[in-house]
Image (cartoon, rainbow, N blue to C red; front, top):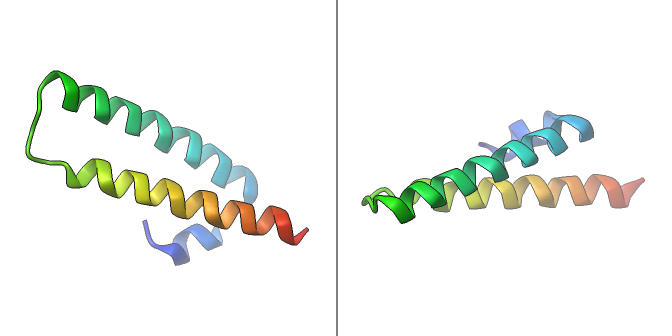
Amino acid sequence: MKTAEIKEMGIADLEERIAAAKANLIKAKMEQAVSPSDDLHNIKNQRRDIARMLTILAQRKNSK
């Protein structure tokens, strides 16, 4: 997910997306633990997307 896309979202939408992304990350980690695959980039990218969303959410909350 691009930073520009994240900046266009509202606070409530960001919080929902973060919760969904965290759930998807947990699912991906469980799948990786059960049957290891070579696709570790997916987990890495999900972590980075969550971090981007949390950063922008924190910036918005601190600016108010």
